[in-house]
Amino acid sequence: MIVIRVTIYTIIIYNYTIMDRFYSTTLKKNVQRVNKTRVKSLFGKGVKIWLHPCCMKFDNVWQQPIDIENDGSETFDQKVNGFMYYNCDSKRGRYPSYFIEC
Image (cartoon, rainbow, N blue to C red; front, top):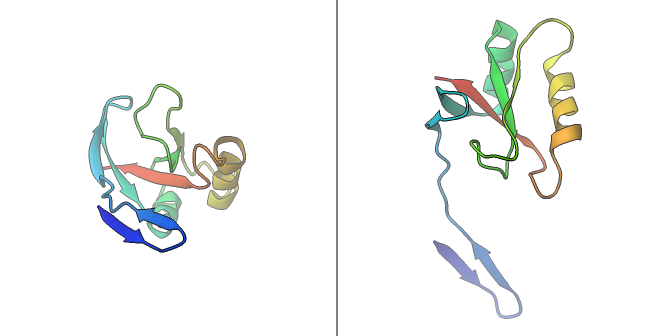
């Protein structure tokens, strides 16, 4: 843990690692977290992508990951914006995390 102390305010920064590859018990698959630029290129190739709010655990009771595929009805940005409008907020996370099967 990295702790930075300032005289007036106390700022605590936690150094944590995000598991890039893991087994999802809800999907029954091995998944990998990837960045947005890689997901855009994979979306164009027709790979199934799962979206999940960034501050929530992937396997939880309250919210399941939502999958998107390139079916030609909407662009990648339109699907992500729709997900963010309904699923992202100050408690669950302001942006989505992107996952693919590995």
